[in-house]
Amino acid sequence: MSVSPLQLRRSGTAHKRPTPADLLEGEVVVNYNPSSCGFFFKDGDGNTVKIGPVEISAAAPNSTPGGESGNSEGELWYEPTSQALKIFYQGQWITVATPQPVGYTGEILVGDTLFTIVDGIIADVEKQGPSG
Image (cartoon, rainbow, N blue to C red; front, top):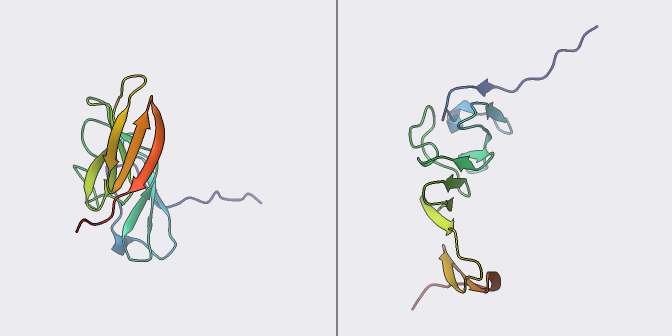
């Protein structure tokens, strides 16, 4: 007797993401298109969440959706023209890393976290609270 392989629901359409209504609780679906591959599931709040590699492209991930629009909190994107690594946080893309000269010294604010860098090494991390 032969055993059939288990296959997840899947799509090969670029940038096609399932809507929360498309997903059952605990179901994982896959997009295998090389330009926008990833796994997707519905979280406890009913949002579609992407698990997958960092998107490497000039355009932001899912900027021309083939399915569900929007991005997942924490999703990563590397924009090669500016060489910037960005994270989707609170509804917007935030640059978290750009090329720095060797031995860079300075401060970089990412969201509400301030990183102090001395000679290219993170020396301090400080969470910024609300002002006032």
